[in-house]
Image (cartoon, rainbow, N blue to C red; front, side):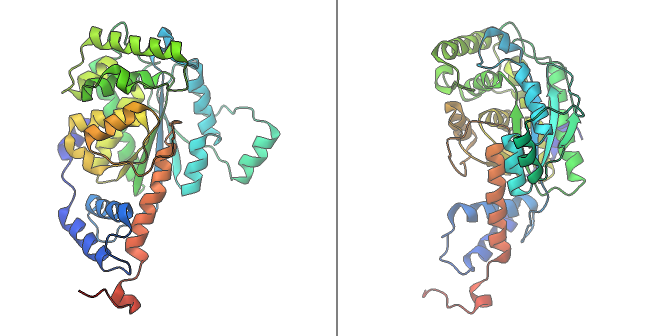
Length: 371
């Protein structure tokens, strides 16, 4: 299934199963609505899956990595080599997302969408003895690796389009393929995360264009840049938008002009999840930009999205508001990698367990409230 087939397959989530979930929630041993967002999540997941009592067992976190040509404009605090270095860290199981994925019982799938060097998954990073002991105690193992490299980084969007339309379609197709492949193993929920030095510059441009917000209002400090680099970042984004003139109504055009391979791949995953009726938990700012692309391509995809958290990056809230997504929590996170989305999986699992495992008033022989 390519991305266009996925787009055409997306339907509204099932209203009848949402009603069934509501009836059961109202009969559980608690005041109606007293579990707040957990009840809302349970209803949404029932509607997505088309089941009265859904279950979440197999959980997958996709971490997509790619480099950005715009880094040559001096918009990041870190060199682009860090992208590949962090990919090896993911593969060794030592990154934040690995820890949190283990915590919620999820599998990490690391995807090279466009890292600026060849990634060899058999290469092991050297870690000190203490790290080795810690990781061994956590049952460290190599993570799944998928090579979907489109190119060795995008072009510099400040000098022209970041990628060609054929590369845009590959991003989206590859994202759908990743979900399709995972769905054959019966995945119940997907989370998405990103890695790519310079990607908040691309995401800021995407959010500014699609939401028609000022560049200043959506552009944060990414990896923690100083005032000088922050001003440069805003200047470069304005330059890229003025030069490329992306169409805010056309997600493919925006992705082509100012996007990134990993951002497009995540948009494809979201569209694939919607087509295959799989809930997808969205991570921070860069994944929010991907969600905007997916939403622009097919607004129905929103019904399958769950916003894990709200990032410190100012553009994330603007992106979520534009789509109409309410984050599950706000912990001042800004790491990326899917860390917030992994934590969100835990809340989704809690929500369906409430639905499945909590007793009704009749089951527990508990008196209901007076009418």
